[in-house]
Amino acid sequence: MSGSAEAPQSFEEDPGATLSLAQKLDRLFEARRAETGERPSYRAVAEEIKEAHGGKPVISWQHIWALTTGSKTDPKIGQLQALADYFDVGVEDLLPCHSEEEFAIRLALRSAIKSADVRRIALEASQAGLSKEGVATLVRLIRLLGGKEEGLDDESLN
Image (cartoon, rainbow, N blue to C red):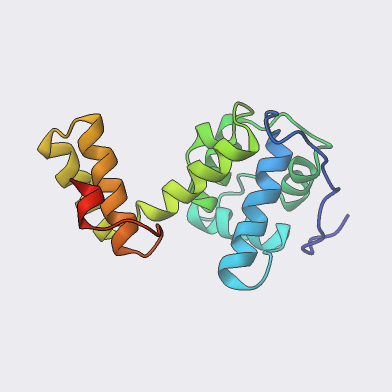
């Protein structure tokens, strides 16, 4: 065990199965790698968390490693909150109650909602009081504008 960014054990799972905390943390570390080009080390994460808490050690790098590899599964709520804050997710996202697909959707949604344009569209749609059909039409229109659906034209939106 070191403070380096060693990948934890491989997890084989059913896509519909609930992800463990270890699996979720592993995916968050990998998402950070995708964003920055480098998987952060457990030591660096612990240091950033410590700095964010005014120099108070909240969680050690060894405990982060143990949680990420699944050798420990019992973080204190303060440690869970610190990890959630570091990865910019909610504590509820770290609880073992989401499937692989649900977790990926939650992460994509959290990432998308950071965009002012996405928030603006959501706010407008919410304030307009759209029906389910109206929302479906809006989604199709967004996909059309983004080139995501072939065969959509102005007539199919009517």
